[in-house]
Image 1 (cartoon, one colour):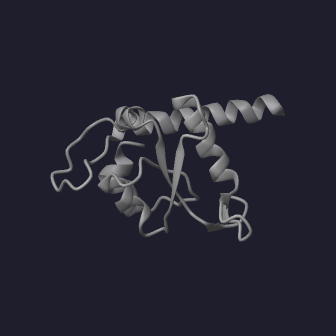
Image 2 (cartoon, helix red, strand yellow):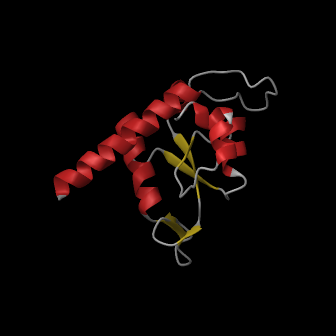
Image 3 (cartoon, rainbow, N blue to C red):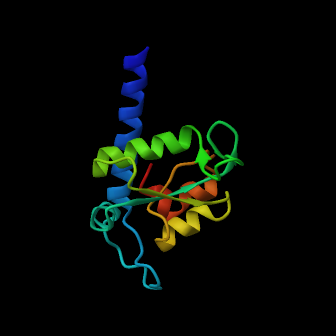
Length: 133
């Protein structure tokens, strides 16, 4: 069972890294949406900025005691950071909502989204999701 979990995590991380490399990101403040590799930007900044939800129990929920966001999505984000940068602590979490997460990614305010998400037909047609599927 443990091997299956590791294999599943490896497949998921591979898909995320491929998506980061394939999609590119817009330069902050640029209206031109200059294309560049998100993976290169991450390595240059030495941190990954993840968009995460803070209101989904077990996946991403803000702990009222510590103020930290905790859950499966956070653990996945840390594992991705460890794989790419060698340190799970090189992450920054920005709280997103269902409506703000894709625009934030497209603007380059976040490098990746790790949050529960249903793909709609409109999203699938968007440039962002075409590079993933």
